[in-house]
Image (cartoon, rainbow over all chains, first blue to last red):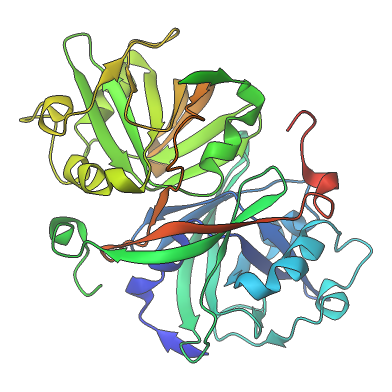
Length: 180
Length: 180
């Protein structure tokens, strides 16, 4: 799990993969599955839609910290397990055999099994719309993995796996931030 | 282009495809490419990140209407053309040979070449974060297409094409809204 330039972290979320979001409420780690995410700025800033219906929300609101962890396709059943159970009555790191790894900036843990992790601070909560606005403060990517494909939730119980990658770098030059 | 149940429209956006967003300012049609989108509710409600830096924003703000159109992979170069030019000086429907089709609820046009279209009303603009909140009011899907694969922008000039689809409908049962 190598640190990558923070300016590249938005490229982990922009394609729209299902992600895990970890928190630590001062007593224990927790993790939830989130598909409703959005890049808001290259710096990077992200939005996630969540609220009091998620047990993790209290920790997000109180600690104002989390980690966005990006799983690959072979983790899909764990990701679904995390998304269909609650930290209120389950130690999800233990149950789904996820390995917490300390971050540098936040108490919420990175997840060793994920291909990428982004340490985040909560910079705003837009209560009216249940949007939590996150600023990425450090990003990590495990480039040594053979399996790099992420999954995209459809919302009907099916998931689309990443297929081939097409390059349009020349056509896109005017829209790519410096250093990317 | 058949109408589909509105309750299923969120499944078009949840996987995170690059989309086109059309507007009509009362004088002419326009279209922009957007990758920064998020589902916010099943009803459906969507967020897009945009602001005054996009020419389309004035029409969105004034008419409070748009259409989210979802292109498939063979449209990628048109999608990039739309995303790297401006409606301020270009008739993008003409230049990129997109066919506007009248919707039922909004003046902004559907795009015939796209596999899906969602007529939307702007229900809020969160100025502080450049978020436009959209409510879907009608949705359409062209199931007769052979090519159904969408594309996901990475943000570095590359695009991930949809790969295979995995079903986890049984595991996900508790999380799938009724009727989906």
